[in-house]
Image (cartoon, rainbow over all chains, first blue to last red; front, side):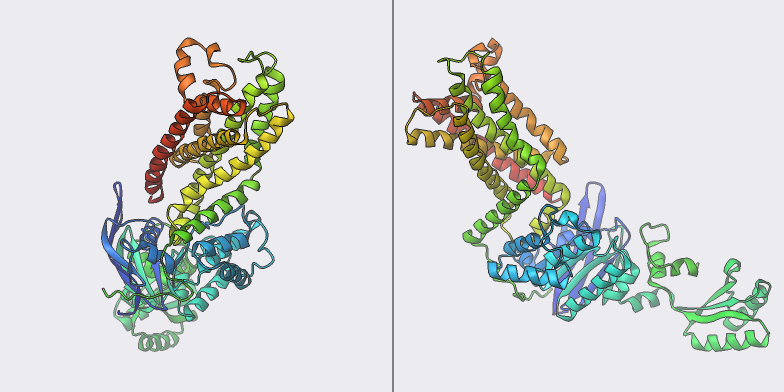
Length: 326
Length: 270
């Protein structure tokens, strides 16, 4: 990829006995979003800290906008914005003061940083709160201000470390829209998240890491295909039909379906899908088995994630579809 | 891996000139001062010397015998020094706070001069100390203190006081970086300040202290500076103490400047 704005090669970092990162590599193309996905403690934040020059890796090389993070830290810092998981804004300053000072430290001329601060306040719907101390802000307002601070200088590369963790759904989808607009405008984004739906909504490509190791990568669709493709699901109306339906499905598909008696649900790998769906529907109808639901379901990214990281990994809070599918 | 040098939209050329570095320092100092005037606890640091002035001038003043007999002209220069000593403790609390709150990460991810965080903080203390020294001078005069020397020596005395305070800003910066949180930073910074204030010739003449303490009490930086400042304000031989005081301040600044930067690099890269 010649237009990569972020290039990471075999990044490794150890803290004492913990190998936080062992050989993570990826590229992020200009104007695209890479989602770095993983459970708590997977090494996502460490990766961000390496790429934003906050932390020196033990091994590996990384470039941001063509600048080496180890050799050209100063230049890297002038082309990036970082918004952290723990909104690092100054509580005792007003929103506007926070933004203006960050603009000053990006070495924008005074008139320019004052204009940009006002612009960010308007863009992030903080105009009314702009001249209040940040300690009076809600969590969502702080997060917006934090992201605003990372954007004051309009940097071409943006690092967002779990930007929506702990936010209510409304604020979250507002932020998503905002981030998508930035990307449309040409900004390159590296985003860490433990929310599958966030990665799916925002990221062009996803890299899954767990315990510091890169375990998968690709688009959301590629990841889903890698983990087993579509499933046919049939929900019978009457519990007593479950066994009969299971036998029928087995004869159609050639393998025994998985059965969940509690949910009156049968599921079976569907391969390409539609042929099996039509067959199964006809046979079940002929046998006079009433159904509540019949359909092809692609795996959720939650399931992909769980199957990749092992179901024991903590911290994957996703949609409720995971529960339904079990 | 192909690197393509891009100059990003809206970002000026990434070169750090001395002018920009100074602008960064000033930005940090501005931020710290804005924080200071909005932190009620920090106001206590400002009130404390005022209370000490009142207590020593009017309460203990009658009971303590000082050389020359005038306790006000003996203790007021010492109160000036205690003022900047207490003022420099805000560095310890401030830097510990920034490390804990994640502000340091934000600073370090910006193209600002990397020295700005610490140097800006020491400049903040300097500005604060100039202001509190001016206020305390006014109050000192109000409770009966008088200068008996020319403007030159008085100014020299004030500069010695500020240099002393500046050096302790760096010591407290190192203490603040080593501390786990702002509270323990404050406690850790209070120890040396307390020792220097009381094991000294600041409040009582050193001759009245126990023998084993006198060696320390006569030669430690606060005592030497107090002696120099008294002589500069009153008229008297000040040169030797003034040079020793300057040497102390320069030495403490140099040692803790280097220590602070080393500790900061370690603490920030965690």
